[in-house]
Structure formats: structure tokens, C-alpha cells
Amino acid sequence: SGDPQSYEFQAETRMLLDIVAKSLYSEKEVFIRELISNASDAIEKARYLALQGTQMDSSEADMKIHITTDKYDKTFTIQDSGLGMTKEELIENLGTIARSGSKMFIKELQEAGTTDPQSIIGQFGVGFYSAFMVAEKVEVYSRSRLPNSVGFCWASDGCGKYTIEECEGVEPGTKIVCHLKIADREYADEQTPLWLMDPKEVSPEQHDEFYRFVGSAYDKPRFVLHYRTDAPIDLRCVLYVPEGKPGLFDLNREKDSSVSLYCRRVLIMNKAENVLPKWLRFMKGVVDSEDIPLNLSRELLQDSALIRKLRTVIQNRVIRFLFDKSRKDTENYNKFFTDYGIFIKEGILSAQEQLEKEEMAKLLMYDSSAKPVGEKVTLPEYISRMQDDQKDIYYLATPSRELAESSPYFEALKKKNVEVLFCYEPYDEVVLMQLREFTDRKIISVEKQMRQSKESVDFDTSEGSLRRSEANELMDWLKTVLAGRCWSVKATPSLESHPCVVTVEEMGAARHFVRTQFSQIP
Ligand code: ADP
Ligand code: MG
Image (cartoon, rainbow, N blue to C red):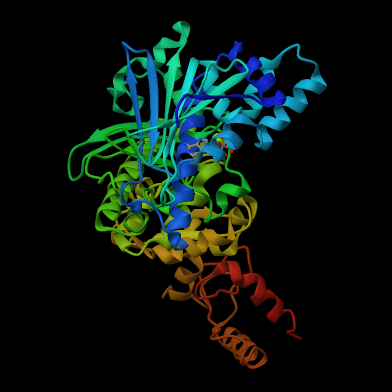
């Protein structure tokens, strides 16, 4: 304790700071993201140590990040209740660049020659030091959560030196105060967070920028869902569907969530799991709810009635939003469905309740015998066109449109002008079988329909037909040679251009397997 002690930054750090401080890099607000990510890292570390049984100063119950601004002092302050730093850690972590991102930045800079540091600064992100892009002085108040720690204040103007002094009244964790440069004092304004603004007052450009910020993304959102509701739960949301297609990484169910959870602007958790259902993991954004307690623990977030309610409300809203798009912005919705439809199918397969499945099923799109190639239909559309005497919804699982059109299974229904949905992916049929019905209409494969058909053949009378005795003889012969391999052999009036078909009860996609069985027939 006593007077502040003065230290010099390591040479590489000095160089980095010099570039950062003079940076004309236009996307300066990245500093907020960097400081938030450090704060949330520090909270994660504290939580991890607590879980391991390390003795800590105060419990993990009040883990939080708080951002405040002061217009008159021109300060931007971020406080976290994370692990905090000892004096040695302040020297080690903030005085040297151990961080690989910053190291690579310096290396790249040296290799490229220092002509245009702005162009590479954004690619690397310079962590904590990015605060110096906007601040003429940064103070870091920190107290380690490990027992018997004292508080310190680290301070620097980013010009070669920093000081450290012992400090009274520092709360466990870290508080970083950025004294803003005149040119950057806008960061001291109460910038209402975008998601709390009136949706009508947010421009597409603001959404683009915010999307890149919250989603750590480089593309744009293709759909923006910005909404607020007070019942049945208080909710302020901005959720984005990325313009880009999902990567393999997104398909992984273990992928981190890209949604941050806030309570009245206070960040509760980055990458908050469970706030959205798994199948919506491609969405990025922010969920803010006053009903979430600030000290929401990880366990509570895992599985609480509150989080389940939040998830249900959001899921229903997203479904309604997407369904709306399917009707009013069909072209873009079709593209969305091509890129992200697989997530909807996953949602149906993982849903527990029939009602929930049918909600999601509104979003499905299929090729249809009633539409030209390239046009898709939804189940509600299909139903609206059904003939009076049609009870069920028919689909045909087939590898392609050409095969669908020439399929013997489709022939009979085509003749009767009954619409059939064509599905091409093997799992489409699994999804439809899981769904079973939609608004009380059974969903059945055309093969099943053909098996169940009670229509009989007018032997003898129709031209070119076998006589009844000949047909019976043929069926008897087939039954004998196929004994043990087929359930039954029937004559049908449904076929015109095909002599016979093999049908399976369900899972036409399994026909391939059936074909190999039948190839052994003499
Ligand atoms: P990185 O986060 O990639 O390690 P940074 O430059 O952002 O690099 O931060 C440097 C280090 O400073 C961190 O690794 C961490 O040890 C320490 N640090 C920064 N901010 C905090 C904080 N809020 N609480 C505790 N430690 C922090
Ligand atoms: Mg960092």
C-alpha cells in the first residue's frame, strides 16, 4: 500500500497500445464486446473454481455483469462479479500480451509492415486493449475472489506506463472504468439498448450492425424478429435468422447458443442455453425479461418452470413469425426453408406434444403434384384445396420429381386428381410418420392408401384385362413363389401403365431394401 507504483508495459504491449490508441478503426464499439467477453470469462472461471470446491469469497449466487455510463464524467463502466485479479495477475494479464490473438496481430503487423493497421485490427480483436481505442485513461479496480484478497486499482493512459495501488472498498470481481476521449464520448450516452427500443424506430442498418455485434457474425440477418410482450411473461426480444446458410457446425445439437439473456439490460448470460428450444439454435440475438431474477443460477437456467415458459412463448412467437413469412414473403421463405428446413424437421421429431408438432408442421414445405416444379406448398394450403370427399393427406416419398411423376404409386391418385405431396429426403418420411396427422387429417403414404384401397377390378368386362380365372391363377402362383416374403397379393384397378407394384405398409423409403429381397424371385 501507499503511493501508486509505476510499471512499464512490455515492449510488444506498448507497440500494440500505440496502434490501438491511434486507431482510426471505425468499428470501435468492439471494445464493449471485448470487455463483456472478459467479464463473462471471469464469471465462468469463478463458477468453475467454485464447482471444483475451491474456497471462494462469497457465493456464486450474485454472478452478474453491470454496465453503466456517466454522461457528465464521460465514463463507460463495466463491472463483473467474476474471479477478479490479484496484483500479480494484474501485472501479468494487463501488462503483457500473453493472449494469442494479440500476439498474432503484432506478428501480422510486423510482417505486413505497419502501413495499414486498421485493416487487420478487426480481424484479430485486441481484447482488453481495445478499451484504449475510445478511452484516454482506463482504471481497473479488481479484487480476487480467492480468500483474504485485497483490492487494487490498475490505471493507465495507454502510453507506455501503468500504475498499481492498493485500494479500499473494491468489491470482489472487476470494475473497469473507461474515461472516454472527447471524440468518443457518445459511448457515455445512455444508449437505449436496441432491443428495448420501439421496433418501428430501429433502422435495418442498426439491425445489421447489432446482429454482427451480438452474433459475432459477418453477414446480415435475413429475417428480423423484434417484439415485445407483457403477458404471459415480460419479454423484449430481438432475434435474427442469418443471411448465410447453416454450417455443419450449426447442425450439431451441442453447438453453443447464440442468444444472450438479459434482465432489464443487465446481462445475465451470454450464449444462454435453454432460452430457445434446441431446434432454433440457428437464431442469434437477445432476450430480455424483467421476470428473470438477476441472480439466476446455472442450475435454474438448466431447468426451471420460468425458463420453460420463456422457451414456449418464444417458440410460439417464432413459429408465428415464420408462418407469416411463408405467406407474405414466400420467395424469401422458400429460400429460408431450403437452407434451414432441416431444423424444423428436427423440431417436429423432438417435440413431445402432438399440438406442438402440428404448430411446427405449419412451416413445412413440399413439392406437390398440384404445382409446377419449383413451387412448394404448406400443409394448411394443401388442406384448403382438398376435395370434399378426400379425408386424408397423401404423400409420396421418392428420390426425385421425375420418379414421382412416373411412379405407379402416384398413378391412381393422379387419375382421380388428388393432390399428392412429394418428399425427397429420406428423413421427410420419418417426420411425416411422427407427425401422423395434421388438424385431424391423417397423413398417409400413397402406398398405404393403395394397400387399403377396397376397389375391385372388373375382370372379363374391361378390354385387354385377364379373365378372372387367369388372374386368380397368376395370384396363386405369385403367392407360392413369394411365400414368406410378401404379406398378400391383390389385383387392383389403380394401375394402367405398370403391370404391378410392391407396396410396404409404411416407410416407402425402405423400398430399396424390399427390392433387394425381391430380386431373388425366379
Ligand atoms: P483474453 O480474454 O483473450 O485472454 P484480453 O486481452 O481480453 O485477452 O484479456 C487479457 C487477460 O486479462 C484475460 O485473459 C484475463 O486473465 C484478464 N482479464 C481481463 N478482463 C478481466 C476481468 N474482467 N476479470 C478478470 N480478469 C480479466
Ligand atoms: Mg478477452
